Image (cartoon, rainbow, N blue to C red):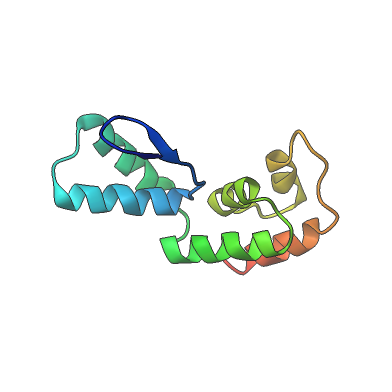
Length: 110
């Protein structure tokens, strides 16, 4: 979420763990992070599986396969290796018909 001084939400956009880690790292370079922000940065860096550019590219490829943006971001963060892993992401919905194609796309980044 984008915020301004008055805390008004200007817009929303889904971002990957890798992108969030990059944003937090850039903020750390500008000034000192609070304890909570430092913990968040540490967590994000530990769990980011791809670099920011790779994650963005994977999300774009998944969206081009018909995956909605929110799910594409989640897939990019988790990098499912098989249908069972993918089912965990789609737990409240049916797997898409092109589930194997989605996995083939993800495997290029593992």
